[in-house]
Image (cartoon, rainbow, N blue to C red; front, side, top):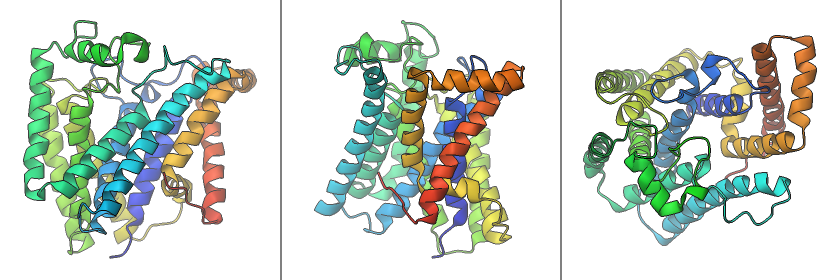
Length: 355
């Protein structure tokens, strides 16, 4: 089956978005580039769930080659990739301390994180799909979301304080010193991984849909239908269970997967059906080396911040553009541009770094 360029573009848009929102130059940034403080949904809140959605799609595509058989080779590959992603995530956390001269920060090192959650979701979903009958997976996905909803509703899950059961469990497992320092709720905590796994499974089902032996137009219609169903259910549920990225609420899973499916359908129509495939190079280079460019951006961002480079560049920009919001945006765009240039060079040399 012909490779869908739209998948690479969506992956690239997502990674570019993650880098953009993580690298504000100054102390302020425009509201769309800020996460919701608690309940709610901003464009910024979409980038990480979109990436996790794409992880699910990629999991289907990669494991389909092995007929979803739990051979020694496949299982070894799954565990290797899962632990590698988790270790890289921990390594990024460590690098921030190392830049300050603390090379053994084991008493305060944050254990959960973005890459840690990606690694866990990839590993758990991959093992599920090679060991379990696929006809049970939709029921398991629904069961995870229902169980997590009950946990939130019965465990004070929407309270942004220490009484939240999610925070209590995470503190008992990791210890408070190893969790997110800016909020009582760790946004990538272990308990939130329950709904994040369901999120990744939804991506897996969309991956299955994309590889069906039907026309691209029919796949687009199915994708739009799935998106509409998830969006309606998600927004209705949000009346009682608000959209909340920090706890990865059930409504948040359905709504973000719905928007992800809808955006993918639009890109498929524009790029794969109408063949409007020019002008996407910037996002394509991010999509071809997604995890590598994200990791590189995190390492460079930490170094720039710790060594005062970010502040110096931002202040220079702020002299030219006195509006702090706009100056911060310019810095973010320049930072993304540098990462994009790196990705372009790798793409032209046909270097694709797999993690």
